[in-house]
Length: 202
Image (cartoon, rainbow, N blue to C red; front, top):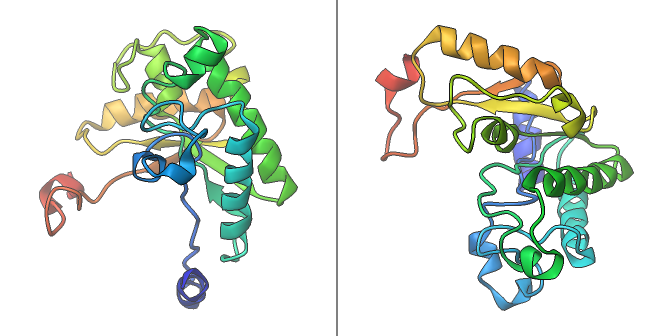
């Protein structure tokens, strides 16, 4: 079915990019017994575990065989509670950014194995610079911010809520610390059966 979708998109010059989750937003999967040993907490995978990277590798391999593009979106957004579940029991309290950095480097290594060009959501890094607030106007950005993200991973800036052009301009400039960002807006289809066109256009 994914191959059919990819072929159909190609007719119109549309590139179908696999958007997966390689860290968080996995509570639906992680509730099943097959996922035992993969959970940091109810929503997040357990970083730095062989079983976790075997799962991620199988995801990357599967999706890369279904589409023409080499691009892949790794997700990694809203990984709240990262390092505070099973990871904490195994490794003790660890800085969340350092966990993410090591995890990201391992996932990037798997992407290279399959010749993939990865991108990921940027919010977990910006939350660290904003004291947990993704949309905080004044961010405390460290001088070594660019070193947190491997250079071959593109940052995707998602923002569905602002109607102020100046805010977007400012946040795009912040993202440029990591390279040229990809922007993801929303057509607001997650609040009912149709899009919220007024907010979408604004």
